[in-house]
Length: 146
Length: 150
Image (tube, rainbow over all chains, first blue to last red; front, side, top):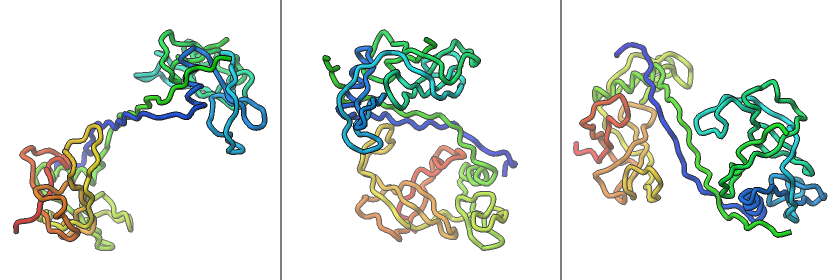
């Protein structure tokens, strides 16, 4: 039977999804295209960033758009090796970043120049914007120590 | 405040590269396909016959018996007519994908049923394999199934 060596083969699954977004997330993404971060007002008065269409606690529609700054605080992180297609060419962190003036966390990459020892919970970071922006979360290339 | 011009849609492509590892049991089946043979294996404990066969019985975890060749004739146990176009589609819709129970096996293979109008395919229809001219250790070794002429 050709021995007991197992066969293997490379495969790729690929789906070219387009995703429609609601008015709040749409405005959030439009803000990214302009190089500005926005949050939305939740029913208890706090600000959510990234923006959501509905308040995760009350399921009510979220309120007004709130302009935010570029700075935030790392609340959690994990260190990963850089892969083909990643924005950062060396090892970096994926992190939950609490943007100043908001509750919750934005999930994004943090570039410390490949040095894991610089990553710490509570570290201050700021957004590194791409020069060419299209209205996508990748308009922020990554965050970096502030 | 001037609100930003909202975005209405984003591209969100998904791509994953991976390696399929057939395992020892499935490799026996796949190598059989390269020789135009459908190799089934029976469980010595519960008598279940698997096609394609794994190495161990999924019901009682007993190692399966030596492979046995089946004729390849079978029946459609269920099917669907694919009418929906999608990226990367190999065949032009409408076409039929069926679960086929090969005579002598208790499990089913999924494959195309062609050389018949989709509207004429039915559960219980007798089918036979049409082998590809390419001999490879892959399901592509069977081009499709068709109504059996026997």
